[in-house]
Length: 68
Image (cartoon, rainbow, N blue to C red):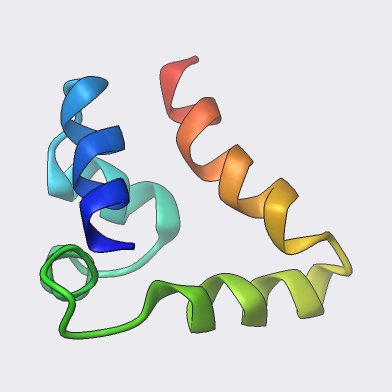
């Protein structure tokens, strides 16, 4: 997962801070996700349960909406 996160972020020229701000988490926490020290799926799954949106939709939204 961390390779995917880093690849998507760098391919789109986003800083860790920009992605972290969008996700409403600290840059340090996002860094842990990218380095495999924390599992981001738990955060995404929690948010999907709260908003009753499917996991895949949230994952897609995180990266595609940053391009807008």
